[in-house]
Length: 231
Image (cartoon, rainbow, N blue to C red; front, side, top):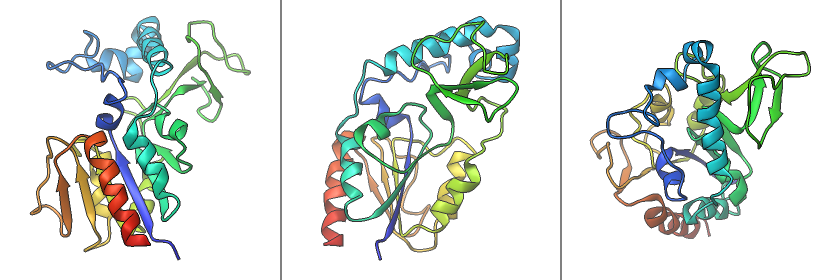
């Protein structure tokens, strides 16, 4: 029976593909407070601004490609039962070839009805006011905004709870609720943390291995080692 590997990924893995984090040193997103462009209140007050913000992100996503870290994780699927839980809203894991991806914070290339959150539509072009769902309601980005529930959090926690190995890539693990996921890992299973500025140490978790490299710099080597353990 294959061991279960759960991979938790954040902005760091996508940044190496050229995805802008849109957040500057002052915490502003494209010059805007995060609540202006990533909250239900912001959307209610200025929907055109919010739609434009995500249109920019969507356009940029369509110009970039998966990197060697994304591709390396695909190779793990030949030897392990791999599930990726990502905080990223891009589709770079899927484009690389990963088959089990959970998007905690939604997906940039999907939109949904403002009235029925189950009405979700694939979307690759700009989203503007007047784009309606089949029921006649305005469409919005399929993104989990600040202050909204994270619908897939329970599913992600269950995956971590049943894992044999956890890999954390390119995330500070400081933003909740996603940061709490690693605490669901069974005691004493291997946990690998790949980040050039790791925010955890071996005192935080048993059996923790810190790899202070970027995703591209550290993930392919780690994957090769794990494949070696499985063969």
